[in-house]
Length: 305
Ligand code: FAD
Image: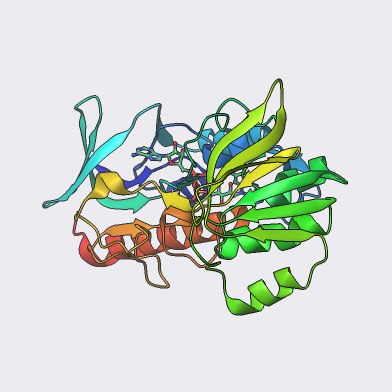
C-alpha cells in the first residue's frame, strides 16, 4: 500500500505529493488530468514571485517538480469511490483498487455552465469564466455577466472599470450578492442590472455578438448586442464521487479543519474541492502542503509498521 495517496493533480495535489515524497514515504498521485484548471488558464500574474506566467507552463512545471521525486504518478485515471477499511481504498474507473494508509483529496472544481446554445461554441471566443484573466480582452467593449450572486456582482464591478458597459443578468427576482456589493454595483454609471432574466442563447458568428434572454415577468424576449459574456453562476467542486464517504457542506465542498483533516481519520483534503474561503493557485498549494504535513503526522501517530 501507499503511505500517502493523493487524488488530483492540480496545484493542491502536486504540492501535497511533493511534501509527502520529501518525507521519504511511499507516495502516489492519481489524476484525471494532471495540471488541473491551470491548463485552461492563459495569463497568471498573481503567483507570488513570478510576475507573469501561462497556465500550461505552470502545469508543466508542476509535473516536472513532482517527477523529480519518487512519486508514482497515475495520470488519466479517474477515482470513483473512497472506502475506509483497515486501509483507505480508492477505486478507479478502470476497476483497479488502490490502497493507502492516508489519502489527500485534491480534486478541485469546475465552473458551472449555463447550458445554452452558443456557450460551448464561443468558449474563449467571447464566452469567459474568469474576469481576472479575461477582463482586459474586452477593454472598451460591452459585456454581460450572467449571475447576480457574489461572484457575478464582483465580476461586474471589476469589469465596469475596464469595459465600456456591463449588463448583469440575474435569473431570480433580485440579486443575491451581499448588500454592500449591490450598493457598489448600483453606484456605477455604466452597469445595467436585469432581474428575472433567463438567458436563452449566446449569439455570434465566429465570435460572440450578443445575448438573448426572456424577461420572466412578462415573457418577452430580448437581445442585447455585446462582445463578451462572463458566466458567473458558481464553482462546482469535483466531489460527487465521494457520496457520503466524507463530510461535505451544502455546496459539496469537503469540510476540513485548519490541518486539512476531514471527518474520516487518515483522509485529508486541500484546494478548491475543500471549503477553503478562497480558490486560488497559491492558496491551493499552501493547503496541499498543510494536508500533506498533517498526513505525515497522522502516519507517525497511528501506524506501527
Ligand atoms: P484543480 O486545479 O481543479 O485540479 C484538480 C485535479 O483533480 C485535476 O488534476 C483533475 O483532473 C483532478 N480530478 C478531479 N476529479 C478527479 C477524480 N474523480 N479522480 C482523479 N482526479 C480527479 N487562480 C489564480 O491564483 N490565479 C489566476 O490567474 C487564476 N486564473 C484562473 C483562470 C481560469 C480560467 C480558471 C478556471 C481558474 C483560475 N484560477 C486562478 C483558479 C485556480 O486555477 C484554482 O484555484 C486552482 O487550480 C485550484 O487547484 P486545485 O489543485 O485545488 O484544483
